[in-house]
Image 1 (tube, rainbow, N blue to C red):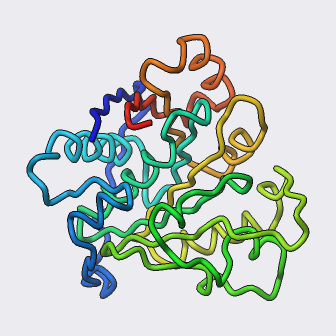
Image 2: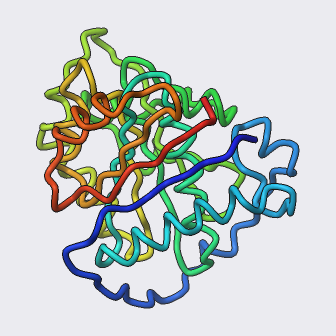
Length: 249
């Protein structure tokens, strides 16, 4: 595993997070072994050898909780395709589940190049996000998959029926309805959107309008300061939580 460094921008106001009541779902067991977690590009959180990485994600989670209220939606947006943004999104969602009173839902919003379901070795044959957006008959619960990690679920990107994916899908009524429904159904659920790269396409900017918090992921030694500044300029400064410098690329 490689090291990870991050910093958070100054928050305008620190808000306390309500202590949500426990739910039955928190007792769902983790079925993956440490080696299976590594094989799925998770940080094995019970492995002392990776304590520095676990603590890095735990600290980032704590900072997000400090600047946000209630169960928020976080957009994890990589500067470029080589940043390891999906790795950060996956493990940040995992870190949220370290608190047994909280659950996390990761949504793969990289419709052109989805990776989460294959990395986590999940059979996503029932479809995913794009199937819900295209078909009014698709039920939300049918596209939520278990990951083998307690209190962590995945909505994969899915596969389009039409083959012509547009960024405007993210601005549709169905997309807003989906996020509102997912957030309001469970008050202990924190949602993480795994975004396509920022530079070169409008998808991440459109997704940021649906999120409460934006975390930018830069490839350590790969993205220049100019790249990072150009990427950050796409987002509302009041939503911008900071930059994660990721070496796991």
